[in-house]
Amino acid sequence: MTPHFKREEVACKCGCGLVPPQAFMDRLERVRVRVGFPMPINSGARCPEYNAKVSATGLTGPHTKGAIDTGVSGKQALAVIQTAQAEGMTGIGVKQHGAYTGRFVHLDDLPDEPGQPRPHIWSYP
Image (tube, rainbow, N blue to C red):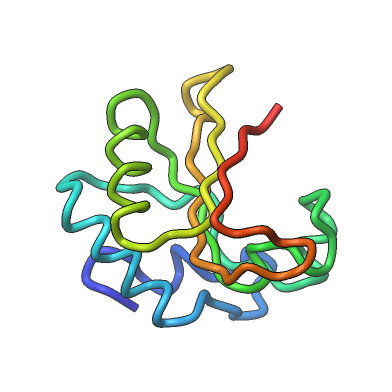
């Protein structure tokens, strides 16, 4: 999909083959190049059925339209957030507490729509 993100890393984990839109992946690649360090993918695209199984956002959450969660924390998380904003990401979710391996930053570039306010930032419990 891009030099730093392979299809198998960002595809839906159910095996259906759904991947984020290429325009989103190109934006994500620009973020990765600018930060200059790896951004491991914890979660990529999700088909509606898989998303309903793993997320409270149900059949229509951001991951069904084009979003990723990257396993970064601390200073790297801050750099990703700042760079993502500069590159036009509109949805940023932050989980930076608990076990180090469970920390991540959610990124999407979805439009402002009813039930999906953008730009928007949130934290996870």
